[in-house]
Length: 351
Ligand code: PMP
Image 1 (cartoon, rainbow, N blue to C red):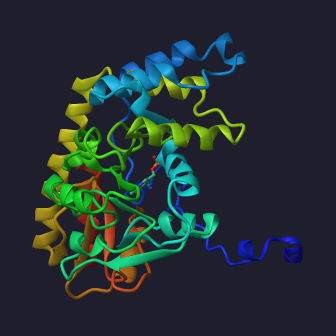
Image 2 (cartoon, rainbow, N blue to C red):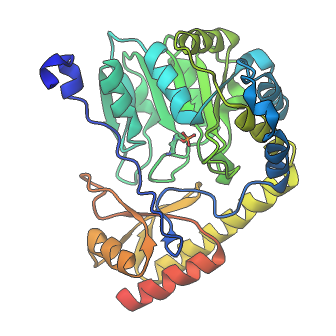
């Protein structure tokens, strides 16, 4: 059949998502979900909307949600674009905002969806190695480029770059779009949204999948100059797709109205992350400093894939990437204290 396909489709290397097991007795620490549920207020709003109203199409502009995001981040509604998860927002960005005649720059190592989108949208790219301590070297992103993208904190390392560094980049790179993917920012980073009014080529993406515990609802957004947002709207409207369904629009908006729950659950994750770092170090793991809801670590003597397999035998799933340079690392999502007990009991047995 493949003789009917466009040749580039044959060469596509699709993204491989983390395993989503059905078994509820597993301790699932592999895809950076939030161990706490969404805000009860979100659930109330979703239940109230799950009525006869579902026979109607949703608002194509997601105005209620965009207002909630704009108010929360102190920007105007025409600076906000929403999508079905930030992966969809990123897909639109890759589709239309990066130039095709110069390489897109992103780090090597980073979110593994970026090269996948480059393959799909036929964008040339240059992956710039992290330094020896896995930090992004901002001075290397100054060359000719068709755009720049990186997560901050980076994934899967968890390392965070301060806003002065991002501003340094924006002052030298004002010809192409710079995208800061802030999927994990609420666990210890600092958002570059405060810079969008000064840098019209800056686009910041965030998700409700992590800090707002709504991975299953699929909501993400971008904040930037109205012209960039308008471009994204044109791209989106060139597919006949609604941005978000009715439940997602209202549920997501409600999460911005429950600041107390948001702060409490982020704080719990951060506290548990810090405890995990100390306990892992005591077990002879080398742990990268993390500003995210996961830790990236390697054991000084034990093979990472074997460790992942042994944890799996004890019903614990962590993420192991068989990629050069990081194949001896494990990425472990921060869970509840009781998940950590299960994890460390198992590690003590294995090591
Ligand atoms: N960016 C980064 C860096 C991520 O790790 C993820 C989650 N895998 C995403 C974006 C996408 O998240 P979502 O589509 O759930 O918003």
